[in-house]
Length: 458
Length: 164
Image 1 (cartoon, each protein chain N blue to C red):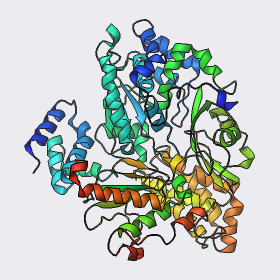
Image 2 (cartoon, rainbow over the protein chains, first blue to last red):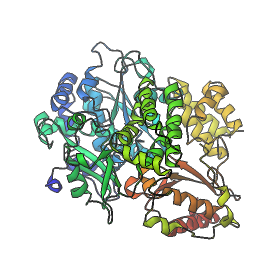
Image 3 (cartoon, each protein chain N blue to C red):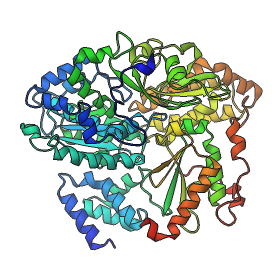
Image 4 (tube, each protein chain N blue to C red):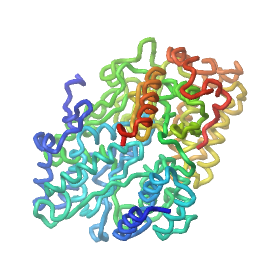
């Protein structure tokens, strides 16, 4: 049963309270660091993580041990670790919950990773909406320093490493590794294309490792219990570890759940998340954030892991499952997603800057009943052009467009043939009546401002 | 003019950095807090402190959505317009707030108390629809809940002893 599975990352999760340093210590915290520093070589730590098969949890799924091995032995110093908490993939809130549940688990993972690549400095990159996380981490960093788990000569060894918080100014693209490096360097955070690998020349042209915090939080467990234990946590023979699945949308119990990686989508939705909301039936979901394709009902039993999803032409992404019900117009949902990406595009390269608004215009025309049959192949062609963009942002952004075209082409056609949205202009639901015609306004004359409801200024 | 103590503190912090530019966002945030927004004067002062040209700093300031180049209210309301909040009728939240506050998106109430802005998914999807006010999360929004939140903030700002 999924409810009985072992909690590794959420072992110390409590409602509305972060685990303290003492609580983390009592649960075996910092034992891995104590066992490693001065006793194992950095290469040994790398090898254990490589053997454990830990794949990056930020979306790309690149093996963490291989990323670290990219730092050349003769590579320059200082070396940097960038724990990435620029969690801006729509539907994703696992890092926020993880950092707030057990900050020292994340910190121990970062320190172990620093040891594995001989890094001296870490820069904890946090988005502005997560200011609370930034404050919590700064406070707990001081506690870790007092205990000599951080700072100069950690645990009396020759290994020194310290961590600072970088508060981002916002924008999705800062989560992209090369853009993040530009942001920290005080440059406009456009992504970089080509050039030397970041493990060789990243921040200030020094070896740099950017890892998602969920990935980093897996490291202490691997060191304490071994690679075989980590692999055994998985629901499938090919997977490794547990996964934080964020479930949201039209489900009974939206939340972030830690489950064996490879748990079936149906078990996550119907088991952990309590099934669909009353009156809702499953129409589709985005399985791993907004940069993944819609998945219709036929895939409901897929194992939620990198390889099984890849096999059916989908991506695990961040493991953020957003569930849409039968009353949702997926053309309208795709408009919301593309509006988001068009706004968040850094604007540097032409395919992304010009292509996403063009796709948006086509979708809006279809939604308003002004679509034409030829828009369908045009949408596919435009989505294909996104492969010429500088970074992975634009190809990711059009994944829901591909999902719409591949599985819901009939729904697009209905819009075109009926010359209107078959779902009505606004998605219908009980909330709509709750909000309608309410309130006379907090401020004088506020009720007469309907004409002021302008478009987004950003 | 930036008060002497802020200027001195920033000068020391920047001097302690290997590269002045790495403090750019921090400096913008501090000046924004001081002036209420990143005014033209603030852009010039920040650029001077960071040994950058005002244009180089402007290039950053206009990129980030939490750096405000125009005046904002005491409370900045960021309503999430991510796809999960959209499913939970975020549009109705916007319309309700616009009606309640008598402003359009991107506008500030005449008393300078509230600015209403849309923002990218804020990572509170399990409590959609959701918004941030000065960095604090408010989820599972209903008209009643918004009424209570706003009344409370209006009340707090009238009673400085309680909040500052």
